Length: 246
Image (cartoon, rainbow, N blue to C red):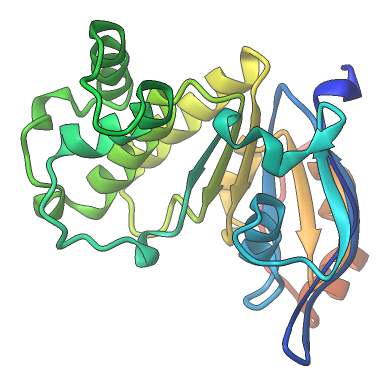
């Protein structure tokens, strides 16, 4: 795998006033992998993604993609925040949300082309939500809402995908649909990064893991990362997690 198309994080550090949220994070996020970001509450998982995207300022370090700052490539990036950060009372339909993913390519206050509309419908079909096209977003279940925002990201036709806690409050069907799409994106060479907290059986759906607790504890394949000493450093005490059978 060529690292020219990877995201390179170099000594990234973030402070909230006097509180150190992340320190000296250095790693590569490569295409063709579904990468999970794990760690305890307050470990800096969401902070890492937000700092990479420039949503919060970094105090130290840099993040590059194709040899340029990642923030120069925002047109190639799809980001789905935590559901708790979204106003579900806002009066928009499923179709409105999905087509937000086409605004950057179309331009503000311009009519969507037939190509954009086809991409929007294709995205809804992929997440099995086309029957809900005209439903207000606030009337959907948590899992359905998450699928709609996944469809919005697919409609963007991005190269890099960031998802922050996409499995919170979703049903098993939605989780399966989301993971299937993540793997299809990886198979065609996309970078897929997923912030998650669950150390249960779903962890086997990730190709690579990043384990954080304000600093980088470990990164790489599951078997390398999920070692007892790494989990002890990250979580403290004894941690229960899903162990694959040999």
